[in-house]
Image 1 (cartoon, rainbow, N blue to C red):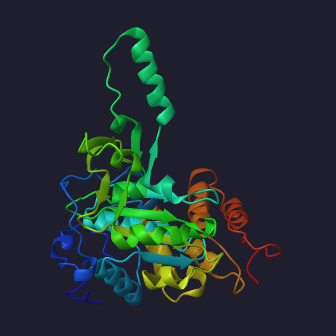
Image 2: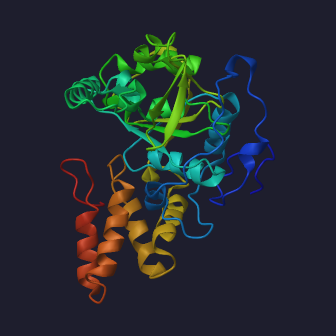
Image 3: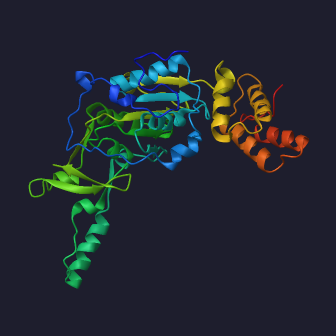
Length: 343
């Protein structure tokens, strides 16, 4: 199938400069943060681990999925990705970063206690106070600049004024408490946030150098972080809760079906398996893919189970076919209670 010319993300798995062809944003999504940051950290090992990058192998994306992904890139809108565990939601963020050359994925895992501030920045006031006190007692002139005690979180780092957008993975947003999704609205809509600790000293110290989530340093001017290129935000949800209309209207919603319930499922799984294991033992791997897809309709299996089964049976019991099959079936039991295999 020919890829439409307007696609920036092609789903090919081949790195390219498509992000440079992205047109200017809509006027209502144009941001002017600065001073501009031109360098981003290289693609992280987490992306390599998830994608199993081998040459140009790529996951199989349906045409409508590619359309929605590219719509989010053009409109500078967050992508809300829903689907069962193992359907490829988190992997999408790493695939975008790899193909478009956008560097390390900024990962913000969400739990029930997560607050917006956790994603924006942390400030270690106690450590600064202790250092100031120790410097006085020892008569030293050590730096206790406030910026040295501030660290931007994944969201805060993503909103720095990079020339090229960073990729931010907000993982399992449905695990948050009821307030966090709505608290995100302002930062995602305005593309900026303030750091009160820096704003209070802005008259005497116009800028401060702070630590980023990458472990690098960046300057924050006048106590405010504002993006230049809106980040590629991928927010995942396992569908455990509904989100408010204000959040939904600010996102592009992409639902990834379980491979077992999707006509593209076999191709997607085959691409995933080949990316991690190559063509070694391809016939046996294909048989496990077919077994994975044959469970009772509505039962739940995760792609991680398939990858675990292939790896273990290749490394541990490769020479005994009965043991390989038995162990693979044991590892790929449906996650639902009361279901133990295909019927």
